[in-house]
Image (cartoon, rainbow, N blue to C red):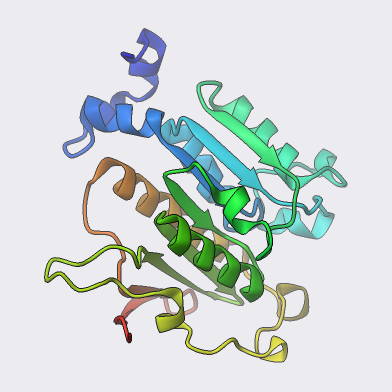
Length: 249
């Protein structure tokens, strides 16, 4: 179905953009994605993907908004304290772009339900703050053969990569798994929560926005995704660095 007059005006800067155009905007409108987490990373990712006109966004988060979230989780308002983050995020998205359908899911994702919660989508973005959840998401995406954009932040720093271990690179080699990047599950005390060590709010904005960028690239087929590459952002020195990792088996 062709874009409406209102949509054509709304997405005009995409439509004239080389590499996106009308065809790319149609792909964005037809896309179904899942976003795990409506917190620090999920907030900017949801904002930019909603603005970009993604057709359907499944927003998965079982947590509620608290006052301490608002320093970085910018889609929520002070009046949303105590409200479920998925519902608050859906309200934000509806206010921003009523052409986007947001499906709030107020369940906690774990290994037992990950495949069910992430089924029937074209792409998954993981902005969760638990390594256990990130493992479950990665395993489910590999089984479902769905690309995964995985971001993480702490203190002043952030990381980002894209996983599609069921696919091959230009040389025909299988792309790496989550376990190639993280071969061992770290102990809980080696990954302190942001409640304990803190996180600078704009770091979430940097990584969450880059997650949205990778999603748009994957959906439209534009550019080079972060397959086999871990992007690292050092906020204090204002530097980006990159580490390559490969399939080990």
